[in-house]
Image 1 (cartoon, protein in one colour):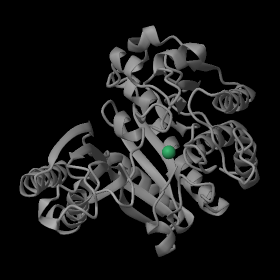
Image 2 (spheres, helix red, strand yellow):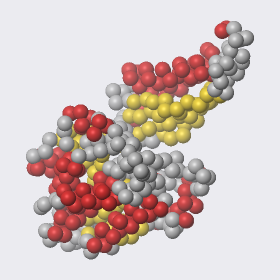
Image 3 (cartoon, protein in one colour):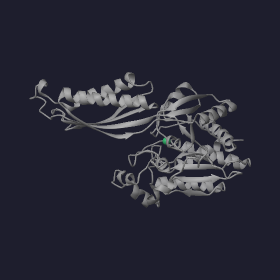
Length: 412
Ligand SMILES: [Zn+2]
């Protein structure tokens, strides 16, 4: 079965037109006109393959290539939305790979026992509404009707309103659910978004688990006093206290939790932020991730007790809010095995690896056997216009996907 690299290249180039930025890359936020155009391109390409395309209440697009028997389908896909000033490979690679699988099967007249479904998940990126993987959360019942109203974009438009404007029917949220057993297996092809594969010169990753984040917003309140007139022992400097927390997050993630724990303070807002005033208030955003729930919980608890201790010691009032607390996912051992064998059959080297970033596959894993194929991100760059994956690696990833899908789709 022959994959055509030039077709993959053309799809990638064509999709890069929707939301294109002058300096390269794309801004294709969920439910914008650029998202609509990219969806239309995918719809047309699937229709050209003789497939029909449906859209659920929250905009997940699905398309089915029929099997010989009416069994639960094998599903593959990813997402077409991007972050602002994003790259042209994140998400898109998984859609293009899925499309190529269909084309090759059609060209060769290959019939499979089970149907093969293509999916484009809605709103995978959290950039617009502050919540990620919204489409797959709706599928697994993890998006509540209330959240449709509480998730808002920077203009104050709610997810509900954006969906309605996009022609969707968010009141029918529940109808987007897929129940366990309704999908036989799910595989997502995705760029790694880290530098492991690129630095090792390995073209493929078979993903074994997906790390999940806990996110904490921290508010520190001290006292904004004159930087000249206030002696050192009479200060309540919120920024110095915040610094202890920042260094503590690094220390805890590096050496006091699990071997896969990572911790980041991604932002800080300082008030009043003036050279000659002691910082009175600081807000920090902490992101802690792990593939192991126990290690993540351990790190989170250590960070919380560090905050309490720092506040007491320094006379700073520290409040925090846990804005996300997701559970790491172990992907299906059976799918890992199918993907390993596919790579071996094709003679490609691969690495078994965890995913540090979240993906729709982690929700799909709640309802079916789910797996992921990674292709390298040059220099680990992602969520950036400079994101790049060599075509030959995308082709290898697509070949492994094809092999695995055909194998699974012929299982009784
Ligand atoms: Zn992605």
